[in-house]
Length: 159
Image 1 (tube, rainbow, N blue to C red):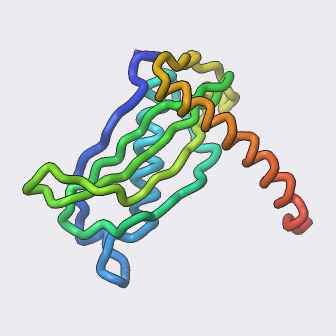
Image 2 (cartoon, rainbow, N blue to C red; image 1 turned 135 degrees about the vertical axis):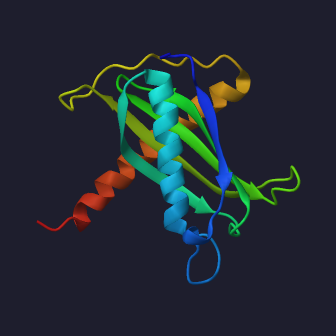
């Protein structure tokens, strides 16, 4: 139901197929999990098909070991007309206990589209708690920073 599912957590085991040459989970696998959770969260909020418009600020804090239980938590922290800013935390740990450690954090912007691939409106998310207001304000500050970075990057685009 649109507008009702603001957050979700995907849980699964890190498999041997996810390993990199160093014996830990490959960063690309983590990024795929992030994208999956961001999509599920955005679709749950908007009730629409969503595409990834931006993934940034990805911080790989600690490695994930094969066999660990992985939790990818996604939460809407800002909505525009058709966009949803999703904060994601990846945590992992031994499946035999409940302790999880932060491995990765980032922000993903998803955009809702219609059957013709055109952007479409999403329900507005209005923060109510002080924590949610701070998350929303942080998303707005990050938007301003991305705009400035985008302007600087224009000089590096080759025609």
